[in-house]
Length: 74
Image 1: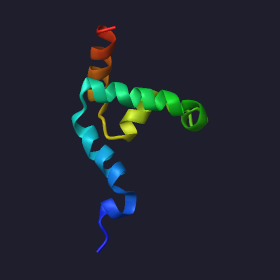
Image 2: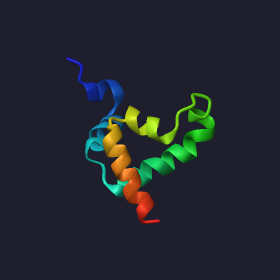
Image 3: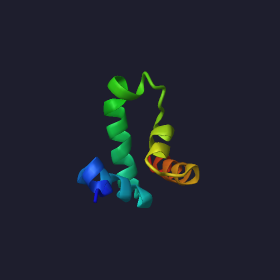
Image 4: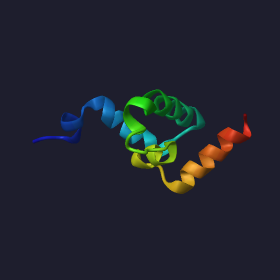
């Protein structure tokens, strides 16, 4: 029997499941990853950070909330 962790790997599965309860620190970590990968991966696909996070399971409301919390603290 194949399990999801066998198909996509344990690290990706861990990342996918951890995204459902984002903290501000995790959100900032994903922003840094997106920025570092933007030129090689996301630029040609026209994927902005909001779309990147939506693809990782965050809702639009959660994104707006976390994004506004981070920008208020800067």
